[in-house]
Image (tube, rainbow, N blue to C red; front, side, top):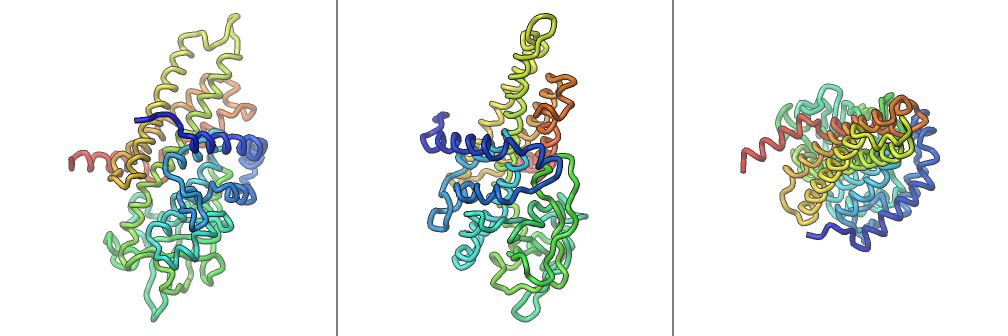
Amino acid sequence: MNFDYNETQAMIAQSIRDFAEQNIRPHIMEWDEAQIFPVDLFKKLGEMGFMGVLVPEELGGSGLGYHEYITIVEEISKVDSSIGLSVAAHNSLCTNHILTFGNEAQKKRWIPKLATAEWIGAWGLTEHNTGSDAGGMNTTAVKDGDEWVINGAKNFITHAISGDVAVVIVRTGEKGDSRGMTAFVIEKGTPGFSSGRKENKLGMRASETAELIFDNCRLSDDNRLGEVGEGFIQAMKILDGGRISIGALSLGIAKGAYEAALKYSKERHQFGKPISSFQAIAFKLADMATEIEASELLLHKAAFLKNHDKPMTKLGAMAKMYASEVCVKVSSEAVQIHGGYGYTKDFPVEKFYRDSKLCTIGEGTTEIQKLVISRNVLKD
């Protein structure tokens, strides 16, 4: 086992840090308060190879693995987790779904544009009445000759408005049948395909979240990913990798909040000395540092398994669950260490606090992760 960054990882980490300081940090509160999704920023990230991290070089990507991917999402999220969330959703959901399950023609058609961020990607599984119960979805695709006709809606979709292409999982069989769903790729501008209401969110406000609406949307069979009935199974495999993404996002939030709290605790003086010298504060910092370290180790173990095509459902769920709960706890303690100032927008910890909660909900709630973990433990 080697816990050091290799030369490539160290170079990537420094590169994304420099980019974030120059291009993201000056705009954090502007984007947050106005809920601006900065499309031009993602074009720049695409030029640097950070929007096609896992995509092979021959398809226009960076050809990197999950350790590097964690580093990129983490470093961005230490500065602004809204941007980290969008980078993660684009890479691990939309792009990775086509990369993993598309045929060669489909990969050549869509992947190069996604890998360079010429196109922004969205991914749709969740519906208004089906969160964790994805099998109960109401959006349907019905075969009509050589085409499919899709009707329904998806909600809580990242990049639903600004995205150029979306991978959606819809019902082609009986409700509740895990083999009754199929995945399709839909390009913006397709008749009958539109976006709906943008969500007004607690946190992650610079990451766009909205509805996808299908009204007699006709698609060629060439837009179908994999076999009919494989959509749910595909989605579960994609979410395995997606849990590493949310874990990396969580790790970045936790590190950002911790570093802000550590800095403040050394600068803030009470009773003639820095508050870091008081055991109540020092012990908080000790707990925060330890739990962040444990999160990082879990994440990179899951990444190792993913890179080597080994079973990682259990480890991915563990890493996502633990890191997301830690980031909520750490960001809350960071606000506490800042005292009254932590409750104002003059310091970064209030935003980390607001952003953190999504991590225990998105791509499978903490409760669903426990279900996944327990089922795997009981199988062993």
